[in-house]
Image 1: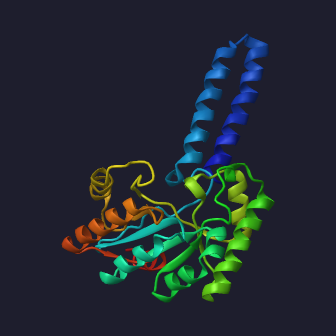
Image 2: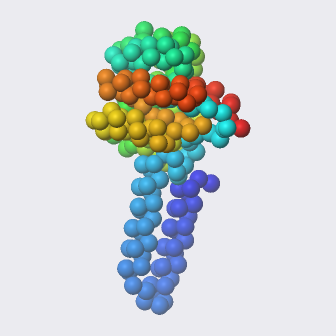
Image 3: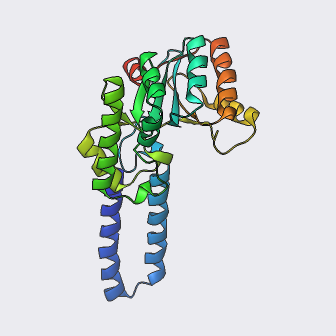
Length: 254
């Protein structure tokens, strides 16, 4: 039973107890509304923070004593992805790219290059719509399957891993993943490179949080993130860290 199912069960049980108390003992409605508010806030928190594993299980880090991390990139491929690949290849680091289906269609050559150079491609839905969290299970399954087919056609490899856009999860996404059998990947180091403008702040944020087994979230969508990556790779090299693909990171956990 998932955490959200436990939450619904507890909320349902409380409702039954409250109804009895309201009828028999005249309990005030304020108690029910207070409990409802707390439960609703818990659901919101669990939905927007993938590391909580509230709706489904996501791998957000691994336990290891080795100096390895997994750098991941969301929302590509874009015109910046080739620059990312150049930097990674220069320092012999590997990464995982969670790619969007409609962007794969626009840049199939770049998508193929990601795979050919030893990096891993994961599924990041077909549309990456801001309304993705409101899609029904059938629509989500279609998005995942379409993107899987595109990746397999271009690279010859069916993706195993999935990251939900914005890290948002809900029961429909949970049900979709049960059907598609993807392994969900979160993160424990969020760079905020799409929010913060100051490259130094972004880099400092990553450096403060990174440790063996970390999964780092970046985006191959801007020149700013390219500059951050370049300096991050220098930091990793200076501290004897190596970035590997998600599948390798999972294999090397202790």
